Image (cartoon, rainbow, N blue to C red):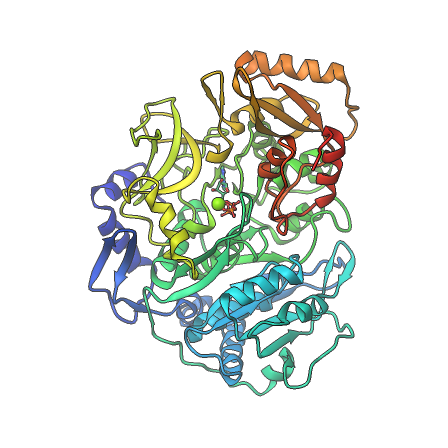
Length: 624
Ligand code: ATP
Ligand code: MG
């Protein structure tokens, strides 16, 4: 494993460092001519290098002892249904066959394939089969509506859709085919492949819809992997849509493979005997990089779970950790806070001693949740790796590494070796230690970063134009923690408040509020104020057994005064049993901001719990 010296080595020549990693971590059909090129605002990695992603995830392992190693342990939601284990060779065979199926349906290199599947192994098989023949996949989260599917398929101009008859969610049977049916209407999709997961009665359209298992029956066992250029597109994926309309981010093969491999290996200290479980749905970038490509590139064993964390009981996740001996566990702060709310008796029912490393991603993690995760799930033994990254970055970028650290709650850590970030003010001056500003990434940009926004280069250019094509602008706020380069994320730039001339970050204020005994989670947004410019308004979810009261509001304000000081004092506190969240579990402050301004809430297609918005409208006297 690494030590401190890796950072110094990497910073000598970052492009050369990545080239070394690319050589060590990935098998290339042909080595590249040049490591890196930057022609603002476009950059390229491993120029003219040739490779295939599925070859790297599968073929190279089946030539070794890993051939019979478990690649995917799939756990169905119904507790009495048996798990499915796919070895590397099983996965290799299925991917080759499905690659041939796609070809027989007329899919060629560069064509787009929509994937609208729940958490079943066919989702990884379909993704890898696309990668094998050079088709570009666009996975759409299975809990999204037909409208979201349709929009994405139209934008991507997909030819083929892969979907399922249905799946289980919290004990209910969800008929996804019916949703897919509406979603393909009016799109260029000509063929629909349907996985039979449930054996439900579904409508199959003659000449358009085919059963997966029937097509697979006659498919050939081998499909030559397409020789892909390092800069050929691997996939398109839309961002979570927390701040507005989702962006169709483009990831290219070579650089993404290198970053996916090394971040998985180093962030989670992956070894051959590990059992890795990333709980993110495949519909998010976390699912792509750490629930498919990263672990498979590393030859790791991973767990994939179909269903809900609270089915049949609130300890389902922990029973899975215990049963399969999960060693590395990666989830989101929103899930951790949910488990805190349910109570530690649920994890306490299980022996979680197999766990070695814990990870988190998606939002800033507040101190109380970090400590709970560390103590109650990790038994005080496992480092918590708080990974900051984005759909755009393709892989993690800012986090402490196991064995190196430091592990400080609310401080994500340093730039991944070979990358570098800065924290700037509006004019581009670097902020000092302890100061906050805008987080940017420096050139050379990490190899797995987006290369474009699909059919929207103007939107792509915005990431670089904010600082005159010198930096990649992350849209996140951050504070420089120490001279070592550790960074605390403080929330989205749009959410930073200026109260009577003081900059206040949402994450830091929420962290203070969440540390109050009665609170589960909170979201702070800025409201305009005549004298102070802006004031914070806090939306707070209380523990289920705590009754909201004016007295509690007063106590919370006192608590904020004592923790950060009176400038941060919320002007108003609104209690709500739920906060509006995206389907990936992120709090949508944008909606709260519109509500308190009596503005329209805008695009809510990515919202998980629209009823919370209706409740809040009444609670605050919203007038449209
Ligand atoms: P959209 O860009 O469509 O508004 P989104 O930004 O939520 O949606 P993602 O790419 O899924 O889409 O999320 C990336 C964002 O999530 C980051 O920019 C950051 O705001 C937040 N984030 C992710 N991980 C962390 C973390 N460990 N700490 C703090 N914030 C994080
Ligand atoms: Mg974003």
